[in-house]
Length: 589
Image (tube, rainbow, N blue to C red; front, side):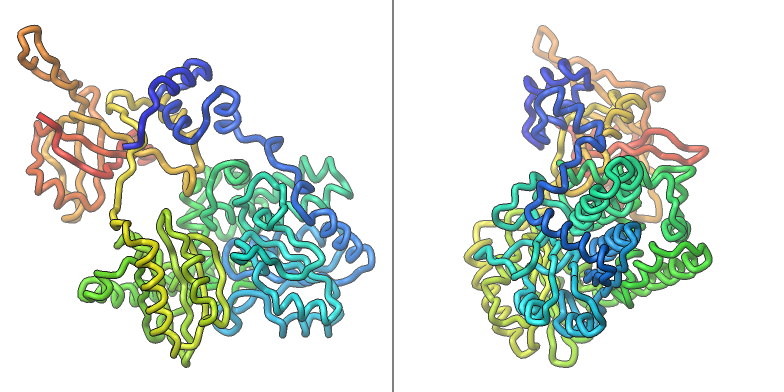
């Protein structure tokens, strides 16, 4: 249970005219006065930071303006995920709006791998390019930056990944990264597309500040919001503003590409607004599927085409690739789960390193996330093919995974990432040494940590306090995600009005009413509990909780404590407020 701050919450609720439970949630987010609460709950364009606060922005804008004025082609060098491809779209659009020529290159995940490639720079130079702008990549491209300098290419790096441990940065005309040493930009956790958007807006605003602010910025927020949510950066500060306002703009998708992508994902913003969940679990995976399974440049074409028929064709291909991605993931995950269940070595390891021959490299990052979800341990999944091992890792709170692989830097042909997610490549023959060193590192840094899957409860909220008005207030916390988690409440002494209904042998449906805690009489005995009748009943659903319900012998009249999330069911016949149960315990007698 999150530590409550009742006095502070009561003061904030009174000052800001908020429901008490919402004030409790805001206090936990570090919001302590009415002005902060208003700004958090009502994101506005005016809250966005000035792009020129970013170190290197003026130099980058002036060089880009010069390229456009001299009709120089500009090469945008992206990454193959949602963040990298949407970043290319934003900058390409801005350059073309100003009359410039924007070419782009997104590396093929399997043939080229992650990051800037000297061979591509050499080809670009031969084709007449003199300015290269990286997006969502480049902070560790020291050798490639030297290649650019030797060729006479001006290099602008826009990236959000962390610098090396010694804070060294590549040689470049300008670097746009809030995490670089000496950068005063207030928001340090922007995604790559948001940084690209800042550059795009900065150069556009020099031409027409009013149009940029009133027309272009709202439009660009659509792509930036998709990237911000899909890249799982913390949804607070400026990221929250970008995501919230971008989702609002996605209610009116103008581009043929967005409309086609929404169609294959089964989304219709005309009837139901696009949510952060939609972006994270329906839009993002389809965009990522291109880079995981085929060629990510198709995403850029999708979002740049004005031809609805072409957009529909490309969106359909993303849908097919996403199905292939799910099949490849399921096949490898089955093998991994067998190892997790049978390997004593893995059971005793605090950092899991799991390798397999021929696993599709496009899904190893997802597989690492699945292992973390199942074990509560940091995990690295490695695909071995043709003598080369490609790895992707995901971490847990409190363990800097990038620091772990930096301790083995001499083994890799390339590596990078941040605290929670990393990627690398190395000769397959070096795998035993990598596992040995990572085991030593993990034993030193994770020895005192006990892996556990904790359910963090954010506030106590009896079921009879759930109302449409409160649900409306809680919606103002959206978008939810990393850094701004969905609230999980606890309700104690909830009475079952009927026996649990089992669905598909695994799930349960309950009908609950809030029961008041027993009160002590003057003589010291307990009064009979009072509970709300069926008129105050609320429906509840529990996914994969049928076995738990059976173990507690739940039946009509049982009294339980539940951890839950509030849900709004939009079913035409059975819609309304309900709760999704996250955990069940018997109530204290």
